[in-house]
Image 1 (cartoon, rainbow, N blue to C red):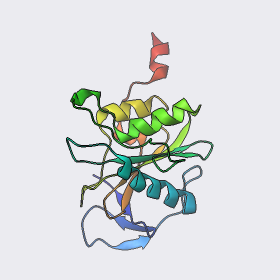
Image 2 (cartoon, rainbow, N blue to C red; image 1 turned 90 degrees about the horizontal axis):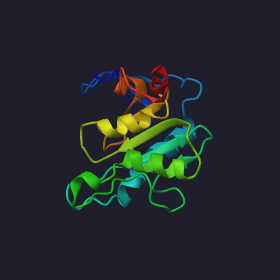
Image 3 (cartoon, rainbow, N blue to C red; image 1 turned 90 degrees about the vertical axis):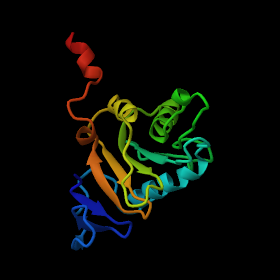
Length: 176
């Protein structure tokens, strides 16, 4: 399913199978975070898990959102909780980490995003956003990167349009 995985040391691993060969990571395309900015985005998503309120599922998730202007929103940003999941005894009222980060960024005037990193403690599995989060992300375009991580820090990069193909967005409302 995934075509590449990159470790936090910046090494690309072909495929999803253990033991695949490792190769130097390719140069990041223009607009894609790289170097220290990418490492900070990934680290902030890991740190955001610590702010999660998940007494029912015991499944902490953290997210860090990179705006087009280069600002990162997460639980580690300015000490203001954002980018973590918050559960509620009425399960449907909980908020996922991805939406939490987006809502915080929007509340501060940002509506253009370049990337999001998502972290959890799923062991050997990559965390992926739920359908509701994918649709909320889609509100702000399809041309941005989503970094799906494992507990050990390895990650895969997907474009939002790969995670939500044939999507419905604001421009579709203008077709009526």
